[in-house]
Image 1 (cartoon, rainbow, N blue to C red):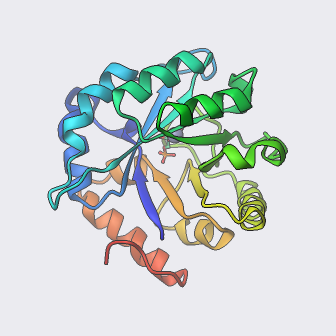
Image 2 (image 1 turned 90 degrees about the horizontal axis):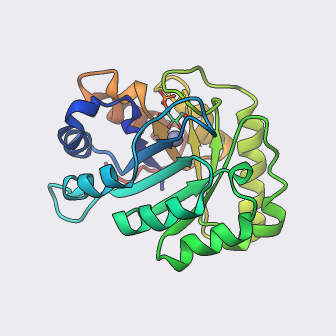
Length: 232
Ligand code: DX5
Ligand code: ZN
């Protein structure tokens, strides 16, 4: 099942609640929440208090709530895991470079009732997965260098996605394969064909007033990739 996760990094921060509500009404599956600390990455964004404030806005018109997908680009990690779990995060992903104890941090995320994600920068190899794949619920492949929205997709991510897909299939585990950075209507199909199932898109969705049209166009592309998307 393919999932679309709009990144609110490209939303209007002055009216974030409304933006989240609007993009969910437009068909978003997840809300991707980018946390930057001006240390691990050269930018500064939003923290756990903002996540907690957005919680009521995650409700879907048809009932239930959108998944809050927190992407930590911050160091140190563990205190933020506690704070975001308390704020209502469903998934918490971090970069292995940002934690001295990747295995411990993965365990902490699950112990706090969240799904655990491991994020890989464009030049970071997947080797860590060999040792911790049993503790991972999501693999996040960065297709840009983290820090900013609106960058171009780095093509070397495609072979990494293929490799991650093989590792997931060999593990036999239920692990989502998410790709983040430079995803557009024009390239989403290639990314899906490489093996991804969860697609973060910031500027492509928030850069167009008609969010629904963009999300629909992405789903149409995904249908062409030969699989059925979640929302018809
Ligand atoms: C980049 C962030 C991404 C970003 C993607 O550091 O992790 O989630 O918002 O933005 P686009 O889709 O514009 O590349
Ligand atoms: Zn992100």
